[in-house]
Image 1 (cartoon, rainbow, N blue to C red):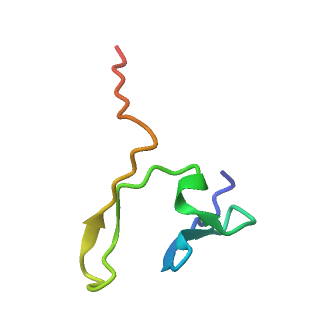
Image 2 (image 1 turned 120 degrees about the horizontal axis):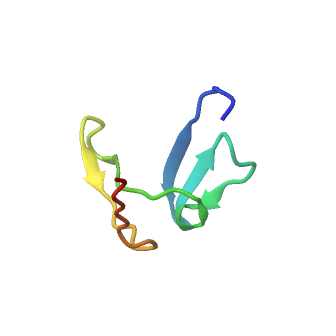
Length: 65
């Protein structure tokens, strides 16, 4: 990283949920991005977060000793 900001915007459309990312030069479906999604801002209440089921990658755990 160069220390610059990172912004990701998701939008729900009739073509599915799309992602605009200032570090990727294309608008992509959410599942084609390199991110693991956990929560997103509620569509009906900006003060709430809603869970996202992102089953593309299983849980990963590691222990460093």
